[in-house]
Length: 81
Image (cartoon, rainbow, N blue to C red; front, top):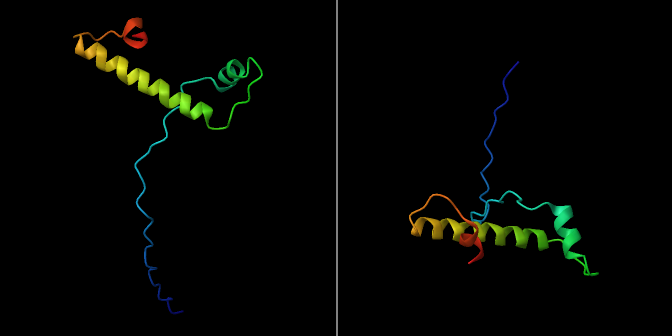
C-alpha cells in the first residue's frame, strides 16, 4: 500500500496582539460585588477586572516606595500614602 503524500498547510499568522497576560484575581468576587451593591447599585461585568488592575497598581506603587526608602518590608503607609 502506497503512502499518501502529505502537504504542509501554510501557517496562518495571527495579527500581533499586545502582550497582555491576564493577571490572577486578587479580590474575592462575591464579597467585592456585595460591598459594591451595598446601597442598591448595579455592578458591570468588567468592574472586578478594573478593581483588580487598580490593586496591582497599588502594590507596584508600594513596592517602589518601599525600595526608594531602602526597605524590604512594605508597611501600611506605603499603600495608603
